[in-house]
Amino acid sequence: MKKISSKYYKFAGLDFMFDEDENPWFVEANFSSHGIPYVEKTNHKVIKKLIKLLKKNGKDVCYLVGKKRKNIYGSSKWVYDFLKTQINLHYGYFEDNKKSKGSIITKDKNEINPSTIFAYNALDLPLHIRRTFPNKFLNHPKISELVTNKYKLYKIIKNSKVLVPKTYLVKNKDDVSKILKKHKIHNGFVIKPIKGTYGQ
Image (cartoon, rainbow, N blue to C red; front, side, top):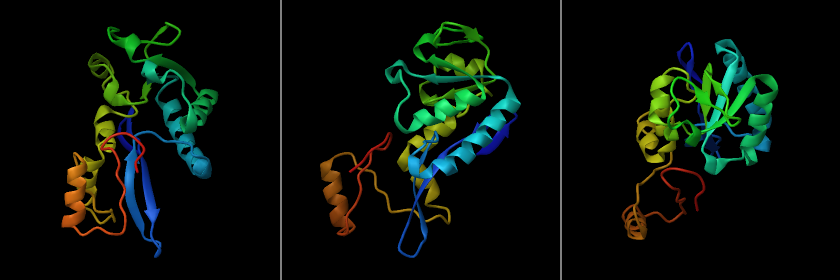
C-alpha cells in the first residue's frame, strides 16, 4: 500500500509462489484484496490498516461496482462485510452514475459526496466521475490498468531483481505451438488471459 496523496493510495495484492529452495517467484497482481480462507489472518491485518486510513480521510466511503456484479460473493464478500461493520459504507453502481455530477448516487438512490471511492474495477468508472473525484479513489484507474494487464506488468517486473517465470504473449493456438517449439518447453506451462482470472 503506497501513499500518493492525503486521500489516494495504491492498493494491490501480490501473488508469489515458492520453489523447492524457498525462493519467492512473482506470479501476478490483483487490484483488490481477496479473503481466501487460508490467508484470512494476513488479509485482516491489511484490511484493518485500510480501515484506519479510510477513517482518517473521512466518514463516507462508497463501494462502486457494475450491475452485472450486483451481489458481492465468494472470497470478496467477507472483506465487504467486515468493512461495513467498521465504517459508513455506501453501495452503488457504475450504471446509475453515468450522468451524475458532483455527487455519487447510491444503490438506495441517495446522493452523497464520499470521502473515498472504493471501486471494484476503476477501469469501468465513468470518465466524469474520475474527473469530479480525482483524488478520492482506492484504487485509481492507473493502478488498476497496470495490475490487470499481466503482460504489461511482467515487462516491468522482469527488469527488477524479483524472480518471475518466463512469460510470452500469445494470440492463438498456433502461437502456443511455435513458442513451445522455439523455447524447448517440455516441463509444463500455464495459460492465463492477459486480463481477468482463471487459467489452465
